[in-house]
Length: 108
Image 1 (spheres, rainbow, N blue to C red):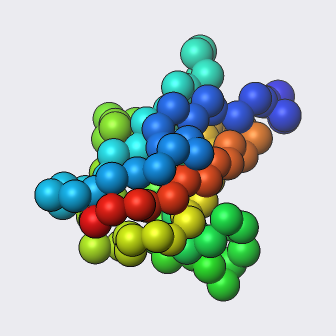
Image 2 (cartoon, rainbow, N blue to C red):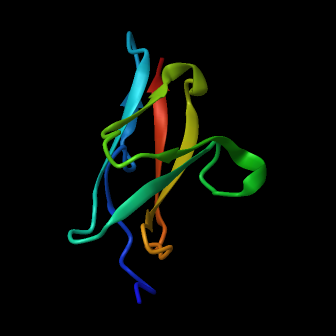
C-alpha cells in the first residue's frame, strides 16, 4: 500500500561545513512526510561521502518522539566528510524512500 513513498526532507546538516567547536553533539533534523504512521526512523551515519557498509560508523532506529536526533561529537573528526541516510519505517511494515546528504566537519 505504501510502496515508493517519498523520502523525508533532510534539513540539517546538509552539505554545510559544520563547526563542532565546544559542542558535545551534532543535531540532525528532517521533515517527515505528513500523514504517515511512523514505527521508527532508520538513521545511518557514514565516515565518507558514500554510504557503503564498510564506512558505517553509527546506526540507530529512532523512536517517533526522539527528535531532533543527536549524535555525540566523539564520532566526528576535523576535516572529514560524512554522509547520513534516513528512512522512515511505517507501522504497517512499509517504508519511505531513503534520503541522503553529506557534510564536512571543519572544526572540532
